[in-house]
Length: 419
Ligand code: HAM
Image 1 (cartoon, rainbow, N blue to C red):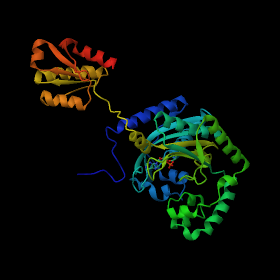
Image 2 (spheres, rainbow, N blue to C red; image 1 turned 60 degrees about the vertical axis):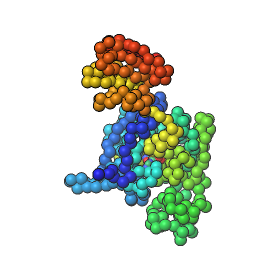
Image 3 (spheres, helix red, strand yellow; image 1 turned 60 degrees about the horizontal axis):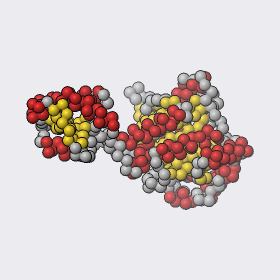
Image 4 (cartoon, rainbow, N blue to C red; image 1 turned 90 degrees about the vertical axis):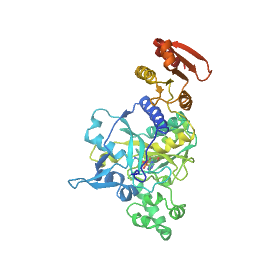
């Protein structure tokens, strides 16, 4: 038997209804806040991700699915969507039509990480990005959106963590003091940290190796090094969140795993998923559009780990599978043919009807109807065909009604509409 690739997974009926529900709720919410859907390709030139996410990050160094196409050009399965959306924004000059653009996209991403619960090599993200607004108020709007989405999905065990990563003006000063600290604990750091520290000391703060985390406990905080503008924006973020009634905590270690961030960064974390605590992550990336050849444009956004959110929602035990509106227990070839016509007729009118095609006994068909939780069962055999009326059983009340065959479709419609 050929099995699926390690770290990839099927989303089966039973789970998929949760995914559909999340997507429905998210699309409605984003629509209410003026976001438009954008669809971007699954593959891009490798250079796009290397430049945007940063050469020193885990994603670019170790996790990308990169390969030469038949002409030898290096292409990569997208590990995230922000770089592609920025590429599209620049390529199609989307800034020229409207000063503020708000997009969302939903789809699979690929990272060759070590698979475990909540961490996959193909995973899905719900991405939201805003271009053209510099104010931290919209960073707060994004966190508010995440909050509302969780509320609407009944997800409670979540907390917003926020931090600021400063800007090209104040970050160099912070990097210097961070590097001094790193050098003082260098003997406790892993080889990745030692290799990256001089080029990008912030990456050391993001290292997941427990001894590195321990060694970095007393590292300086960027919050103490922010320039006046960054400090003011960070205050605006917090006061807006306060006004919107969003709970959050300051998290000075939150540097995120991608290099493009400036100022506000945030994550929605949960205790429900073991080691994989981040359900969503994002922040401001004011320099990325320019880096990719576009005009100097402030931008901010987030991505929700769809798989993780679906796992949490599923733990709540929702049974969202569509149940039949009725089951037709047809016995004999002629009854099956008639039942099949009814199934198609009712299906075309928006009613889901199940039937048996294998000529099983009435008893086993009633069992199946029960298992499928069908509220009504129509019993149709040679006697019913001869008498011109079938029996319709209400499975909850056990009440049985005889209905003329020509009125049966109508009777099912009437009862299903009432439910
Ligand atoms: P990220 O933190 O790399 O950010 O990913 C966002 C979310 O995707 C994570 O919080 C997590 O829930 C989910 N995720 C990441 N890797 C995996 C995985 N291997 N398996 C399952 N879920 C995963 C970004 O990707 C940024 N582009 C977010 C952003 C948008 N920033 C600004 N705009």
